[in-house]
Each structure stands twice: as C-alpha cells, then as structure tokens.
Image 1 (cartoon, rainbow, N blue to C red):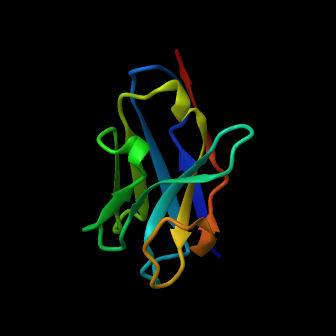
Image 2: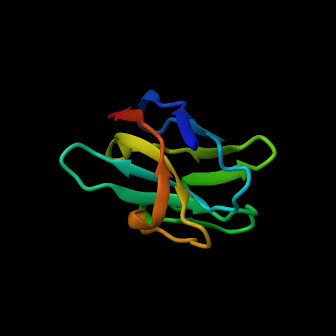
Length: 124
C-alpha cells in the first residue's frame, strides 16, 4: 500500500522560509519521479517542482525558480521542498505526488499517488 505523508507546512511572513517533507512508503520497489503541486483557494492545482528518481534532474515552474529547491533521499524514502523568499502568492495547500512509471514531468494526471497535503500560508 502506497502512502505519502507531507509535513512542514505552517504560517510564515513574506520573505521567510519553510521546508516541506514527504515521507513515502510502499514505493521502494518502483523507480518513480516525485513532484510537488499546490492548490490555492479558488484556483486549479498547479505543478511546483519535480525530481527524477535518481535525483540528478530537477525541474520547476517559472514562478518558483531560484527560490525553491526540490531534493530526495531514496535511502530515507523522503522528498523535500525547500522554499525560500516566500511570497503571499505562494499560499496554498502543497501536495507531494509520485509519478507514473517512466514518467518525468509536470502533468498532474500522470502522477499516480498523492499525499493529503500540507497548508502553507505566507502573510504580507
């Protein structure tokens, strides 16, 4: 049974930092890219960042480039999203997701497993 559990969300002032974690279980036998998505109230879910299974390739949506860093440690079955220079527009529920077998990209429909989400609120 696959389970993804996010943590690390919270309330932070603009310009501050947060580090989100995603603990994965049940995925050790498959090589999957991992992604972070977010959904703000009244908006569609959007891709934020992704990392290949090996960790050697990362990709980001333009609005977070230079501020967010995604990483993973397969030995610990954990993926992180380091978020710096946070802005009020980063406020959203952030979701960790495991990509479909062989898929590396930003399309949410191509991700097979999702966590329950963690709230990030950035005050101005």
